[in-house]
Image (tube, rainbow, N blue to C red; front, top):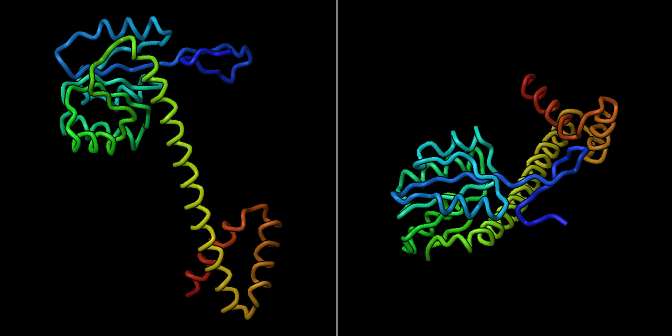
Length: 208
């Protein structure tokens, strides 16, 4: 049975690996207590980042499993850096802040923060908060993947329908005949149906 702060690797040894956490300190407070609490809970704590301006670079170079940010009140620059990271290298982000402004919280969540804690950074509460953030991030990622798959299926269907319509118009086929012809061509060329549709559309555009 694995502890909550460990993950399995695909290596043959099947040994559990500690989750890697990146600390970002955007306050004047020392983070030694936070680092110690994470290490005591079994996390691998990476080299800390002072300020959020180097966040994306640090995430890309150190490849953490999660990011913890301690800040008095997140600035607009911090939110912009988080949004950039969320687009290019999304990670679960836990932010501890002293600012509980409702509008700010909405902006923080929109920037990609997974958990925003405003009632103090207590080391004893850190591990469960981080585990909830990890679970929530994975759930959100799953929803995004499903949405992406549905959107791709709809886009593929539009291309297939357009190619089918071209065959009906240019070759005088019925819709079932056009679809069957495209499927046969896809099987002969070992391609997906949507790839054949792209070929048909490209050829039609070329010939005018």
